[in-house]
Length: 302
Image 1 (cartoon, rainbow, N blue to C red):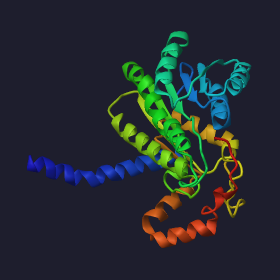
Image 2 (tube, one colour):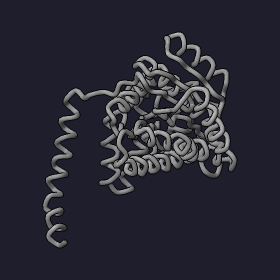
Image 3 (spheres, helix red, strand yellow):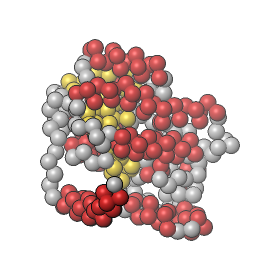
Image 4 (cartoon, helix red, strand yellow):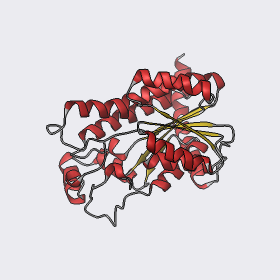
């Protein structure tokens, strides 16, 4: 037994080196991509913002069916009609992912009317955009229910069937704020950090489940109405991301089975700096970059 443990310990550095080598090769080489021709894609928060662009991109890349969930029927209907005009079958259902019973009920209706979901995209999110002491308790709960707990309910509703079929993918549209929080969005940052931990745990838990994978996308501030009014100090140096690009990178992550995607890639340096620098230095970075006060002008939707 001791010899076996010793052998594993000696092999471990080589295994890590091979993982790094494979990652480098994968970065430069063209990867085999998943054919979406048989996939049924469900996008929560699919009526507008990034969700709308995700629906269009999945349709563009050949998804068999696209299903939209959201709270605003007008937006869902408009997006559904736009997708249907491209020739892709599209359906929508009014569903608040923060309501557990509603999620389970609508999941049952969806399976009966449309079929099994093979790609679940947890995109629905809200932001209250205030400090803790200025935040209404109900608004704080709403953010946690939709941004975090909603993923529990949707994943529990659809993952079992994916595991039975040995075919499925769970996607989370997260945020770089899950790794580096800012003032003025305490509800959002907290919910996204919880969401990130959820996906990290889920991704590891599915390692031995053939055919089922996960992708977590962590974009920087994206140019949608959700964060309208948010201002950084150097917008030319740190411009908001284009939602079309975020959608394209997300769909590509699904097709290449990429577990984590940080957008833009320069945000990796932020994560490294946070691990190395003292808190006082990080505070100066927040003040210099403008992230310390960027939510002062926030007027986005919730």
